[in-house]
Length: 68
Image (cartoon, rainbow, N blue to C red):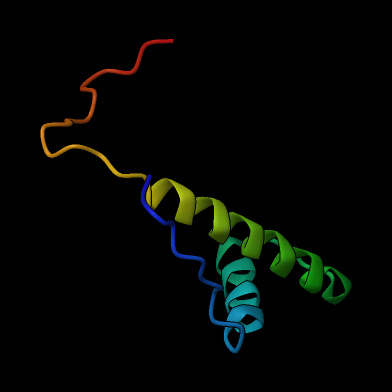
């Protein structure tokens, strides 16, 4: 199995991103929650890295229709 690189999101702009995204989406955000939102985004970044790092064969194609 391939080694999945562990990366961290750029910390310098995370608070600025949270402020900008919440303003753009019109979501009022109490400043006390910024640290918790940042922690959640860091966890989601790690999960996205697992998905993006999963090796797929070249012949793999996306499913045209999702059916549960």
